[in-house]
Image 1: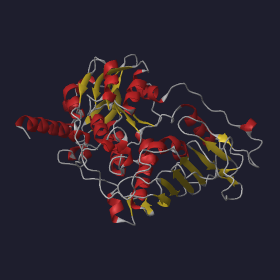
Image 2 (image 1 turned 90 degrees about the vertical axis):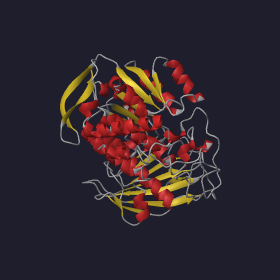
Image 3 (image 1 turned 180 degrees about the vertical axis):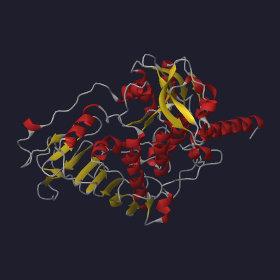
Image 4 (image 1 turned 135 degrees about the horizontal axis):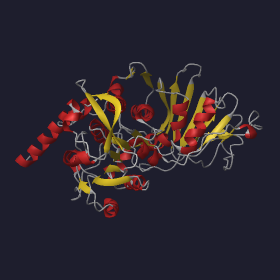
Length: 489
């Protein structure tokens, strides 16, 4: 390491430490920002204040991850008309997939390292979007929060259970607006589910089937793979070291970047983390599921220690919650792993050659979604913003005229976040809601990786039947120089 590089590293290290000790000592509040009255205290107990953008001003937005999915997040936040994109950050700023975003926001400052971005222009940023690989969400998010920045983070919130646990604490401590990017957790899907549970229309749920059976990036890979693929030449535009954030260094390979990171246990959360946030979010929140006490892999086809199975069936067991009964949530992924669904499900082609349980049929194809088995009624729903409908059963034939009405809102997920940054409303998927949901996915991926039943103690938040699996709640120890991020909350 050169002398110049070492100085830069040491400066950033001190910057992180200061952020955890006294936010007020390093944060310069710009003239367009107002202070809220609610007190926030740093780790020393000193009172600090949260910056809230004035209602009539635009939010100054820094965007981390601007290619692939990140380009859409930048576009949609900017499309609210209430945000200025003042900074763009990506480890591959010269990459083909980032150039379009850079061309649209020509005036935005450009960075390859988010630490440098905050160091150089932290006083000009009100909010941050994070649309990087799953494993790199945490350090960007926790640093932004510690600096009083509102944060929008793509789903799943974090790669590991413990990272989400820290962000739950950080949300309480720093009191900034937070939003996870499960975009359907807004508008009709959100308000319908909430109302139908509150009015008792959805009640007595003991079984839920959730499914996403589209083809995934790792399908067809060699399931006998024993080690990561051999390294290749690093693209000249890619900052490969910063790409890793606090995770251990790996040799470069094309199947680690451009969305391929989702395939590997080391970097992503598979199909469950990708789609579960769009399918399981409503019933997880409004049935108050919290964390499961047992996760059982019912079927893992093509299990491998490095990347996700070709198909998975996982059973999540949630205990009683007050008057609500125990619930078993079954997750299905894989192109040939479709669940059976009730008769009268709707417009699907049925496989008549497969033996099925009484009252059930085997579909040949199925859009991502869920079936919720209530005490008296059975509901089907899709993913994202799609609403529930009642499957016509003996008890469900005459309920169409009795469906409870619910609030309709035109505010989408991105506008909801921008409005929250301006102090106008609360986000619908804040970390207090989205972090426990993401922790469910983290537990599921551990069961996939271990290929065995996981017993989880909800009070101590530990895995009790496998010491190695319990270590996976934390994941890799952070690389030298990145430890401070895990001490900011």
